Length: 65
Image (cartoon, rainbow, N blue to C red):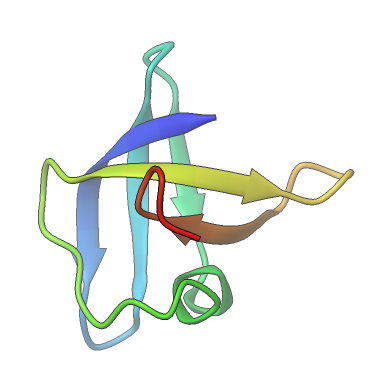
């Protein structure tokens, strides 16, 4: 699933994505840290990985593994 960064707090390393279907999805610091990224900017596209229970486990740039 993919979305666009709606909010990102560099201090807490948490944020919110606006998914392609219009829903908002928050991600925890652990999901950001799993990405290996150092910063996100508003409007940036991300791919979202989730656990079977729907929790966000990783956010990353599309096409980059």
